Image 1 (tube, rainbow, N blue to C red):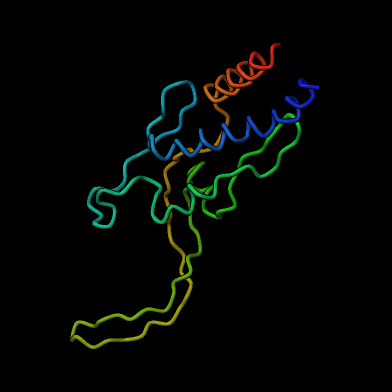
Image 2: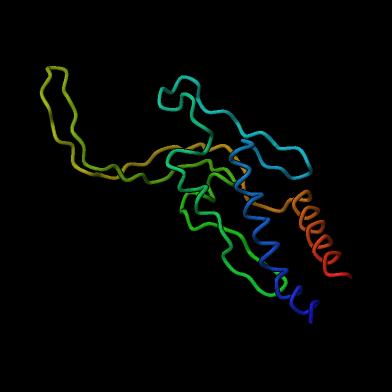
Length: 155
């Protein structure tokens, strides 16, 4: 009975550890695959709004969205539903349509003008900053935790 109860919790335990592991990538500013974090490429130092801010963190939406998407008795899938997550995790180079919202612009003479919302194409180069994926170090951590829990049960 104890082992059956344990085996039903394996997916939840592994998924919870994975979520914590992947969220720690944001604190480490890199992805930990083999025990040492692969550091993310730094932000542009000349951009004023990036001063003192963590990489991949603007509002915190991406970090908060990492969660267990699916789980079974002995497996779990961790992911995110944020549309730009894949571009940051895998990197992206190419052109994309960008929606520009309505805004006000001041002319050289000082007059304010309303600019209508529109779509423009832009060349985009987002460097790879992996925060989700397979990690040997995470697998070892999950195995240690499961062995520890089995030993507590007396196995």
